[in-house]
View 1 (tube, rainbow, N blue to C red):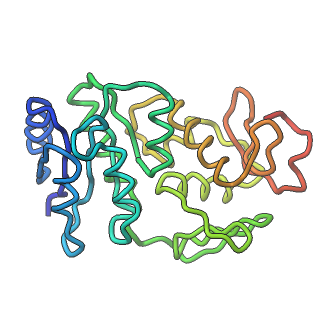
View 2: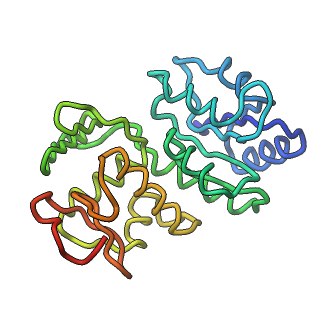
Length: 240
């Protein structure tokens, strides 16, 4: 069965382009002129496999729409791609913090769109995770239940943040190159910049209460990438 994609875009020509392009690649597409119209069509018994949201829309914009999707139990982990003419870091950080899986900045190419959609659909974890618990310091990651606790508090992580944290924790003490992290979390066919990884690391650090200058857990390894460390071992070292 073809994957179902919902699109919310107020520009008629762009919405039509998105719909026709994705249908040509074999997806089943429903398109809407604003976020509220998309939300009204979300049915728990028949969820789409992906939503594509423009940020600037009337009635309910993309960020508001994404926020509501993340508040609903049935759509909490629904993969989402944001499409926007804005390239300001603050807009991307807000989207990532709300749970966006990827960003496409206008103008974009058809092949770029196809590759990003394919990557998000392929890498979105919709089940089948091994039941395994990892604990490092006060952080407990349960890949079977897809939950992360810091002490007694459950952390609200996005799909990508969970995958990123899982990868880092499973390789505790090992410096993972940026390219390897992007390949394993976003997929080998991901087309994007390492800034996407940096923004996810920044968001993950905020949720862990980690300081980039004096990190307890996630350390930046200059000219390489990132590594996860036990708190007792993060003093000093190779810099943040």
